[in-house]
Structure formats: C-alpha cells, structure tokens
Image (cartoon, rainbow, N blue to C red; front, side, top):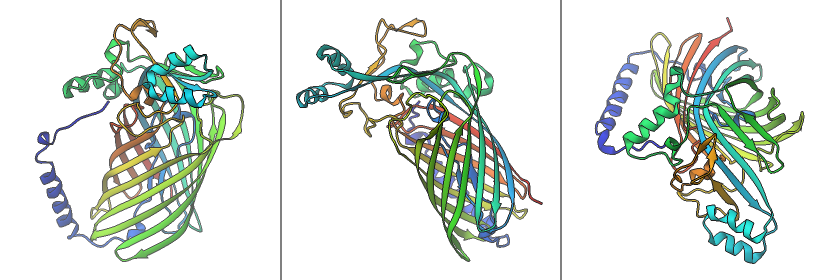
Length: 435
C-alpha cells in the first residue's frame, strides 16, 4: 500500500508542530537539569520488516546503551504484526547468455523475457514466491550490562501466520488496505480485489526445488538472536554526548524452514544534544554486514543470493523529561536492508532490470484455486514481491519511566521500493530488573 497525501489536506500541520515545540520548550525551562548520561538506553526490538524471507534470517534490534558503565538488566516483551500479500511471481535467471542474446534480452520488457528464454532454448534458474496473510512476531528480549561498557541483548522470536479476518489486526488486513486504496484513488498494483485475500499462505521455491510452504494458520519458533555490544568511545559534555559502539551478532534458527546460522558485525554512532533543561534530541546511525550461512543444521532453500548483505538504521527523536523523570519520546527510525535476491533497482519501473526476467499471473492462470480474470497493471512491485530491497520508515512514540517503558511503532513502505510488509504495527514493553 502506498498512501498518497496532498499538502492541502494538512494545511495546519507545520503550525501544530511549531506550537508543540514551543510548548515543550516552555515546559522544559521550569524543570531541573537532568544528566544526559543518566538517560535510559535506546532499545527498539520491532523495527525490522515482517517478511516471508526476513523472519528466518539476520535482523538486529536498534540499540544504543550502557552510557554510564553500570551493571543492570532489563526484560522486554513485544508484539508486531504486518500485512503480507503477493500473488505468485517467478524470477528467471538466464545462464550463459551470449553477447548478442544479452543485447536482445535487455531490449525486451522484463515480463516479456521468459518467453524469449523459452523460444531460444536458454537455460534458466527460477525462484517463485507467493504470500497472503498477517505475519505476527511475539518476541522476548533480555538485555544486560557488564562492566567495561559492554552489553548483551538476547532475543527470542516466535511467529504466527494467520488470515486477516480477525478484528485484532483489522488495520493490517487486506480489506482495510483496499479501503485506503479506494479512498486515495489508487487501486492496488497487484489487483488484490481480483483474488481471495485474508488467507494464511506462504510459499517460496528456489532453483533446486527446495521450498518453504505454509498453507494454513501456523505458529512456530523463529530465531534466537544473540547480540553483543561494546562501547568503543564516548565523549560527554554538559550539553551533548557522542558515542561509538560496535556489535557482534549471531542468529540461531529454531525451526526447520531455514536451518542456517547467520552472523554479522555492526557499528553505530550516537549523538545526544540538550536543547533546554529537560528537553533533548537524539540522532544515531547504525550499520551492519551479515553472512546468512555461517553454519547450517540441514538443507535449506536459497533465500539469499548474496554472500554478504548490508543493512542500516537511522534514528532521530525528540525527548521531553517531566519533573517525575518520565520521558516522552517520539521520532523516526529508517531501516534499509540490501536485497535478499539480486537484481534490485531504484526507479519507478522495471525497465532497468538487467538480464533477468519476471513472470507474474496473467488472464486465465490460476492462483489458490481462483482463475485470474484480468491482468493487473504492470508494476515494479511484481519483482518487489521477491523482496529485492527494503527502505522503511518506522514512526514511534512512547513513555519511559524509572523502571519501565512503553513504545508504539507504525511502518509503511516508501513508494519506490517494496510492498513487504504492506503496513506494520508494533508495541513494546520494557521492565528494568535491577534494584
């Protein structure tokens, strides 16, 4: 879903933002100064896309912490859910193209190429993906500090794939999304209304015939994520803090769908600036590199074409501390992830995909027992359903107290990238276990 807004619909938004900042500043001037180093750690566990590939492999939380070099521990429970809906799409990878064939292939529109491969007898590798439902993640996270400004964040992920008919996640259902599409006057690129939806299906098959298939509501274990962080450098002034942090990560599979251990390294830069006595802002950038196959517990489908994948998160927040030392925080986390499969592009159409071909459902073909009666409008999203790359904004707001914190997040994809998940919501509760 791509939500289009017109500036005229929100003419008062800049004035409201200015008024809010003025009131925040006036309120902050009446309170006592709070040490920036004593502010709570930043830990967001539900800021990764809930996608049929991503739930099985490397993801990291967004974490900045242990600024004060004290031993402490916290426990967090979180729940997120997002829509996944993609009619069947197959990507064709031609093998051993001649120079002349490559010229011809790239002169054709990407969805016309599979027929050319067949006509010319060109050997191809194929990967197929289809999904329908609401993916949900119930996670449990334990965070602890060690002396020497090091930390461990251990997270257990459990997942549910369900249909979208329950009122509990109506706002991530296909029916609600289609109402929004109608309201903004831009119908779904896949022609969602032409097919059954709000089902529970997830299917992927690689070029060797190995697959992941779930065709009914299903609850299963995901991964155990082991994250270790070390503060490398910190500089604190009366009005600001600068830090540099490094991380080591291991993702251990707890199911048979994708039994590969992933590993990676990360680094983050963090900057906190005081605006007034109890009003401060945070900025941070976190980047990681991962390998999806550090070790394997068995055969697994090839979900990832790349030996190494890059990912990054940017973070900015506005924070207001009350006299009772409760912090109101709101801001934005942008999550970038390299494609799982090769072939990603960064423009509106599929014209610039090189070599590969894409086949999608056409008139007369069948998906989940339904005959396609109308070919959906051509769209880059037919390839994006294979999750070529991800760039997602997570808007968040929350309250942090002395012993606990509560956060809410909502995410929607940018229009030039993918549609997986279509819309995602999250809630996280954190409790300090230290005395």
